[in-house]
Image 1: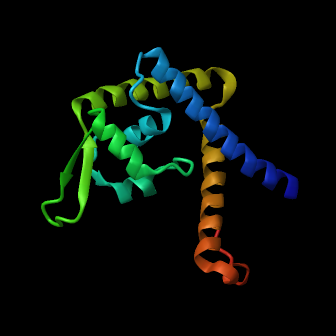
Image 2 (image 1 turned 180 degrees about the horizontal axis):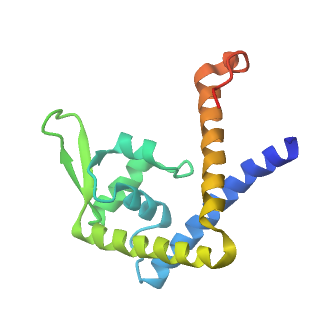
Length: 159
């Protein structure tokens, strides 16, 4: 089990990096050069919502990138619109601009192409569902470990 556990941790990181390369290729193929792959995934995670930078940070995995810096670059390149919250003037909310929505649609089509290709024999819905379920349990386990600190072993998470 130790080997599988350690291999899984490395695999998840490699998969994420490889996926970012796929996004970079998609951007290049579409002639998009004013946004990088991490920014494109931040943009995709915003979608048709409006949220704070803090909410955005919790929503995605950006491999240690500075979300505030990336939001600033996306703002400069007109992919997002930033507005102060009417309820809390200290809070800044972001949403996609028309340019950002157009790129979001391209990324959505990319995901749809990938799902269609996957179903041609690489992975079936049950495979993805099982992998998703296992990764969510690992996420809960690691979140529990962080929250409990040194007491985590004494109070294992519920399955």
